[in-house]
Image 1: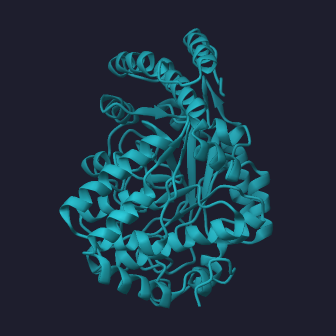
Image 2 (image 1 turned 135 degrees about the vertical axis):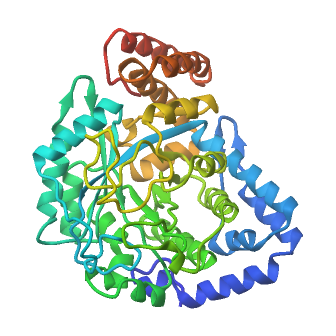
Length: 479
């Protein structure tokens, strides 16, 4: 029986409820009055300077996903962009992944790190190697990392992860500093989540891969990740351990995308029902080619158009949640979904263990093929040329505006007086310290224009003063 308040995976990701939802969606996919009603419910409502959004249930959103009416789809895309602008404006947060180790004891069939793969070199970074990687990332301009590691209690124990986080935060090179470390590691215990919280992590990220339990068990035949319930209930343990910000995601292509979409939204509903706050982020990766992985063996691949629709409907269904797209996707695909709800992207990513020190991209330990291989400077210029503000901001995390406190800011629209100026100031840091001449010229023009869009006059004046001081050599101002 579906129960979003239950702490049991089979209750809040109820298989029958998903099948009933898909049947309901099929029955109503051409019900234009109902679809119009659902879209009207999701539309942002302004009350003075504050904006509110109702979001959608997994059933309502699934009806939209099943609908293929061109006029309705056009309205969906327009609504997704409207919601994105209402809550996140034209800011795009920038980050990079840092792979620490590809030692892994799991047998995941879609990942080249699986224990059966005997051809891939196994690598684990030492703390000194991590320092060098962090310096290379800082020299690009990065200030936010997502660390990744295979699951191996011998090679990658929690102590190694904690020591690595401490190392990353300790590196101060020239004007560089990593100000936020997000963590994407295997499901663990409440005690270990408490230790991660104490280490100062930002968001704890864990992809479900697939919500279809039968498919999940087949795709994870061996290793601790085979335990579907333990994996699916990880976010509850993370929140019990004091981690406010958690990030969900499925690996589209493993199972039927409509099933995964419903399960993903049910998981978000569960977190809201139990903990009072939904996921901080949702990631939307697709299965990609890697060392011994052929994505064509999975027969649930989705087109670029379907992928774009999924992104738009996630934005409509969970309006306050950040959305992440990685360099798995091409420049063309990323450009499309930036307008449909995506608020965070990676730039100049290397998905091999380490890999940032060398100019030539290493491929022997990559977790997946990177489609967008541009430099960070090229990505920053591209974003600004489209009118977006690349943001390296980490202020909310460091000011304690996480979990329900961040969502409260987001839901009342006050985020515009925090995130907008913070984005401009961190962009100016990038322009002053790392940008090419071409990128710097475009960025400084953008900053002058966007400074006038800060709603609060006092904040606008203070931001202008801080920007002048940043150009003069000072760093790390924030609201």
